[in-house]
Length: 490
Image (cartoon, rainbow, N blue to C red):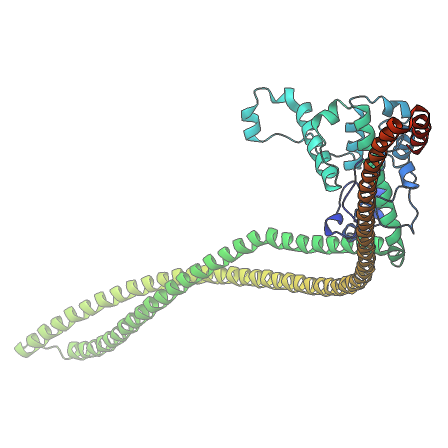
């Protein structure tokens, strides 16, 4: 007979288990329940559990491993939903097939059906195997054997081999399935003990699911905002680059405009200088014309008049030179007008560029304002979500404190139970010592009895010798009587 642990008082008898929770038990349990799933063994506890009957909620916490009948095992597998087929019978367990234990433990260890046994092999395994597709079933069986062995060893059922899984012996199958069914009964008992604590928070699981859904929804909204900001970031960067390039062009156009203005100022200065010279030349021309008229009116046939005529000729040549200068000034004035027209055209172009720059600046400011609004909206949403998360976290911490308080109460109860078990162990040890002392006393009495018996045999031998002498002395008749009495004594 196998057991799931030492006596109740030992620390080795408490083992944490996380195997084989069905979906129904997961819904009605909390993550802290597995801390109290302890297994211990009491040699005196067989009773109803030895017959495979599930324990009541108020029974003792000791756990033993009695072997069950095939009918009891089949009924328990059907009750817990672990039967490989709907028509599983006791004969199928008494005469097991090779696929019985793999099917039962697959349903127990992987209640959702997604066992992950068909996972792909690593590169090292692929390199070690010539044809990996031929070893898929063998690898699945080996993985299942490793899980089943770990589970059975955790409940103090050692020695489970690969032969027990693929080539089952009827006796061994009964032992393994009895261990599994007793574990299920014991787990159901512990869950029933913790059910009042769970009933105090009937909607905790739904509330937890709702809070997780809200957190996931808020996180998704935050991620969507961040994704939208990231998607708009290239457009913002592109607009920023365009604005920077336009600013550089604006600086270049401003430099060109300043150069053109300086050039126009220099041309205007030259023009004013030429106009001043033209006005002076016109004034001198008018004076010379007046003098010429005066001199012509005074022309006479005399050497003085000839000298005057020569002077007039010289003045006339000067006037022609001045007229040429005036013509050149007019040509320069036309060039200045053309330059002014060109400058006006460039000014129109610069004004158009200024309008574009203003428009791009407006667009850049709008994009900056939109980006700031988006950032502000995102910060507001993040702040709201952080506030909600803080509220949820405080609520979860409060519930966690309540659970911890309940946990401490349960731990204190378990400590009291362990103390009572330790007291029971000490009493049983004292009783065993008293029994050994009584047995030793009985051995002493037996030895004394044997010694007295040996002494009595020696006395009888001496009596026999005396009787023989008496027979020889008193005769055969008295000897026969004496022999009869001796036989009666023996």
